[in-house]
Image (cartoon, rainbow, N blue to C red):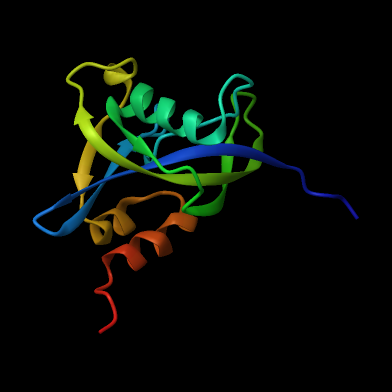
Length: 142
């Protein structure tokens, strides 16, 4: 039996609370223009939350506070430049946005958009995140 090899990525789940309601930011991927969250590969000099924060800055122009523990983990199939696909396991960290920059490293390569978690669940490409956004959109139990 062939053993499946997973690759690890770290992601930021950017959010703000406006008028008591959470809003999340999605960005488009560079090549397919799908709606995603900022994420990237491990880097030797950074811990996982620092990678997530760096990706939020580089891909979406966001400055803020990243959680020290993962909020959720999901899997998706990433298409590599070679045309092959690999399964990625993504540790996702909540990222409370303090500032949105007008200019950032990947500005010309991506769109960014604030939306409600319910709207994000309809737009997100990574199916593992749909349930996370639906849970964020649900009213708290009474």
